View 1 (cartoon, helix red, strand yellow):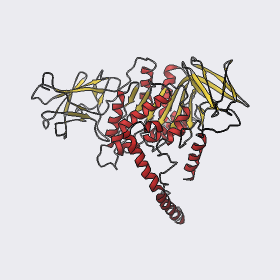
View 2 (view 1 turned 120 degrees about the vertical axis):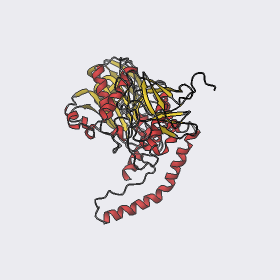
View 3 (view 1 turned 180 degrees about the horizontal axis):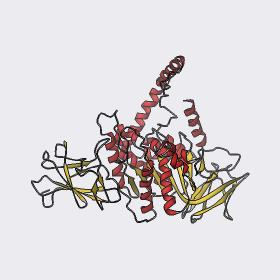
View 4 (view 1 turned 90 degrees about the vertical axis):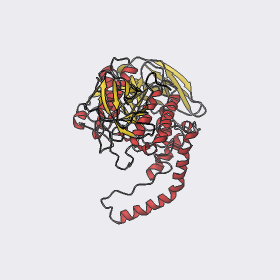
Length: 506
């Protein structure tokens, strides 16, 4: 708890509106080894004494400004092509800061909870991957775990180039995503890793975002209850810890500190401390892997998730900022008696595709039933990279598994339903029996359906449902998921209504 309070105090300090700075300080992005975004005007910002003259020198050009009354300054470098040759960024005021080994390429923000934080060293084939990690043009910025009560202007962190000495500590999803971009585009890639395990989506949302929808009032009410109960829980924890230490620190785990103010679950706390400091930056886009910690409250997730996407786009001043996310993988979830919590989160994630500029990496086929942290992070990174390579860079490749287009009843009295798909070229199944499809009638009770492939569609039928109203596929925390396209990408789980057959009365 002491560490969390320390982090919390840091957040308050960096958010003070009228702080005084003895030295000019560039923003958190501008550390040795940084990557700037190519082909976009690139803001450079930082802090100084109010009214202090600041000069930014870059590749022979001078950019002059004056710190405002809050001690903040900003200049904008003109759009630049990618560059693999290092340059020096010099920031001068009453002192001079030299930022060395700066490259220009692709810059991505990588955020979420533990599956984004999971490192290369913790993932599949770690030894071979680390030994082969000789990519000096791939740079990883580890954002320090920081909670702040108000939006902060700076945060600790450092850039590291990928090498066998460093890559083991990189976010695995971010690294494999960046490696694929680097290999295909031949340019430097910067990865800002702002992730923290076991965190809720509301911790990553701005205060403005959480105030934007009356539905989010439940978040604030729930947190108020946590804060009210915290002193009693803290006292109980102190007693449990004392007993544990008096018993000689037995093998069982040390009593866990209760969640409370200044902790990672505080609404907006991680946004304020770990995301807001980078919002002046020019970035190419965002990759996101989160949702597990919200699964018990899945009914809130769809609106929270779209709220996060929209608010981050507003803060980065990029309405169409590419935002690509990972749909939750399969997992047994033994503590979920319904067996469906992850299904509801997956469906909420799928419906977020209605927002323009979004893309989803489906991972239902590469989960680990008994481990919420699947070790195959290579395919996760590659699937995210496919989205960026096609939608941002225009490469000709398939970037998604099959997604449902519509479901429609067949001829009257057959009980058949045809489900058509987008991204369905070469539609096939790893199991010819095509398990995983279910249909329900007006009563909402689902039954298994037999399925057969017909071109880019699947035709379903269940003798127990004469007039299907709803179809779902790969439903459940750990369902069968045999459907693929020619690129080998799995179909997304889904639940959709069934439209009447052509010519049926409405």
